[in-house]
Amino acid sequence: MKKKYAKMLVYGLVTVMLMSTLSGCSGCKDKTEENVTSEIVSEETTEELTEDVSEEVSETASEETSAETSEEVSEEVLEETTEEVSEETSVETSETPSEEVSEEPAYTVEPMSATMYAQRSVNVRKGPGTEYDRVGSLTTNQEVAVTGKASTGWYEISYNGEVAYVSNNYLGNEEVVVQPTPAPTTPSTPEATTPATPDAGTGGSASTSETTYSVYLEPGMLDLVNGHRTANGVPTLTWNSAKEQEALDRAKAISQNFSHAGCPANCENIAYSMGYGDANTFYVQYYNSPGHNGVMLHNDTLATSQTMVSATCVVNSGGINTYYNVLLIYKTYPSNSASWDWK
Image (cartoon, rainbow, N blue to C red; front, side, top):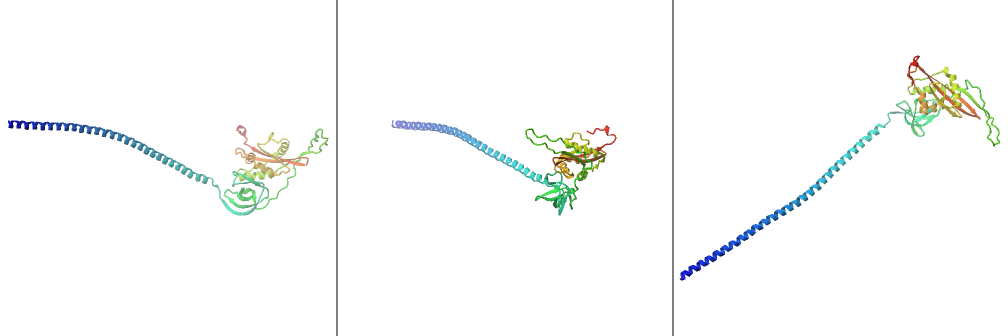
């Protein structure tokens, strides 16, 4: 019996131990499941965190990349703009000297020192040619200091303390003898005007002054005009003796009606001067007027000859002289010119 009870006790203990072991394994299983679950949660959490971190990193990287890209674009734009400005500045800088170089005088001057005299009235200019601006004029026999001769032939002079130029055709080493105004060669009959009627109510006496007219040829004008034409490479003119009377009549006509109405020649210049008038006086007036200067230099290559004649009419009124000059240029054409259109 005791053995029987002893065996039962042993079996009971074994059973209890087995139960205990089974119970412990069951707990391990639960813990294992819990650990597995925990690891799964941990892995999910880690993946979520990783994704969040990845997204944040991506966003940050994107922002940084955008910022870097913007900075790079800005730097590239700045560099391109700087290069363009630099190129434009370079172009402008390189062009400026070129323009300045092109404005250099197209002539040279050989220094010299001499005292010369104006052979007749002539313009003084900024450069050695008629294309330069006029700065003044010289009168007949005016003394000037010549400081050089330009490659164009013009003289460089000292004029009012500055450098200026005069055509070499108008300066000489000696003074010229000025001829007095020639006496009338074909004087017209003096004509008296009707005495002036005093203003009503003034009680003044009537004026007894008379207006007289005298006309004469101006042959000195031919030399002046031909000197000017020669200096400009234009053929000279000859004096037209056959038209002398026509010039005298024309000079008187313009003194009474100062206009080109009734001009008998192909080209005409007219001018007047108060108090004094010789060939130089009128030549300078024509020379300084582009239109009148063009008439003096007129050259018709289709004409067989070109001639001129000049006359002056002196009008004396109340003791004051007014001089009226006319310069007429005539052109002769071939006999068959009637079939040509000269317009």
